[in-house]
Length: 316
Image (cartoon, rainbow, N blue to C red):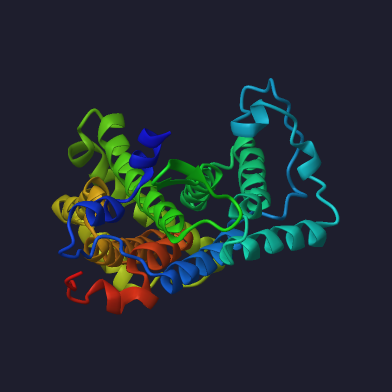
């Protein structure tokens, strides 16, 4: 139990036990953490794909079944009625989570619907990566609150009802670790699946895919492709090195995402980088990752805590 507590404890807690000189490493205050939980709760609710009427039945032994759909039937989610009732239950649970009142129970409805509906969608070929990051962070926080270890003079204790600030700090730290790991893994998969030939073989083709995507959007909506976008994509096709620079910068951001866990200031600047990257992708590729952007804004940039992020360390 004590080893698990040390593993899940953010560096700030361990640092304060050893050194009183002060640090900017994830010293989130109570108000900051409350606001982060509030904004994240809103993000979680809107990330749930509540409209399930267009989904079809999935059996546990289907080859395409994934996640919870392999363990038991989720068909009841297809006709989830009354939908408003389940949404209200989820909202009440998220309010309890925000107010730090038995958060492990409060997160349970949101976690179930996120994983359950997500598994149904994925089992039918809808491999949408836009909400997976939110789902993983939600699961990570749930596990922290499910095992809220707090080290005391008499050893580890479990506090489920109203966890201490150190538990909330641990939940946010675990969220940052998951955030960083997701991007590092994404970058690693690009390299591994291309046999480390991503820059040479894959990137030049991405510029052509960009052109196809934008013209496809034009035929769907009849909205003209912006001239600036056409020029940029044309340059990438004519000069593959430009494509390598653009997509290579994104890959570098993904592979170095572990820098997020070095401290609040690192997280802040990396959050800005990730937001810029996704806005660029949205502009050029018509692929929107708004949930990633808002998650970065909430957990990494942490607007309410910017002043504390850049405040000078105080001697304790």
